[in-house]
Length: 169
Length: 92
Image 1 (cartoon, rainbow over the protein chains, first blue to last red):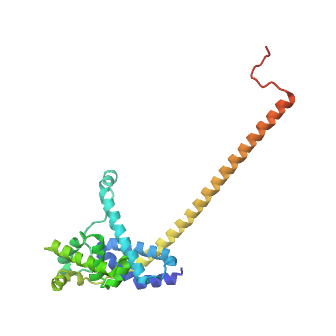
Image 2: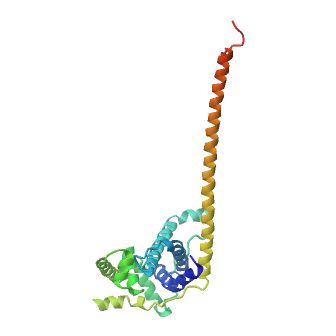
């Protein structure tokens, strides 16, 4: 693949991917790391991209999967973290601190609180909620990204909102 | 219902879009290059392993064949000269 094409794809989609990762992980450092992973994967697999869906949908799919993989890996690392701490003094985990540069100072507390509750939702509900409220995608687009029907997206969103309401009250 | 949902999610709608670091693309380019080098070296590693296996298999095949023919030659020689094949040094 030509370098110009790579740069073009990056310029057009980097903000979208980075912000999705930020909203998913709520940590700037982690989001940057996952954005790198996403684009490396995109450029490795772009030749096998079949135009059944749009490039944007395909990139969203990769980004969501990479975020999920990152969260899983981090949980695994956390579980075995005590072993590393016995044998090694270096830090293996980034701070789990909320560090979202898109959140304004005056909204920080409220946003952090709501994100804490969102993180406790099942992954599919979290994904649907983030894509709908923060990325402002249509239900059809969310359905394409998540490989489910529009009805299923509707149901996921209503369950996510109900669960969130319960957790926030 | 919808109003209360919107109010609940209001802090999320105030999140501003952020641009990634200007150095991110060069980091990605660097990683792509590194992974391409790793891929090439992996290819070479596989090729070298296959060559070694073929070499080892060929060698053992030739060795077996040679040992087999040697034994056959020895038997022919013993038969031709009617040699004694037991290990006793002196005839009783």
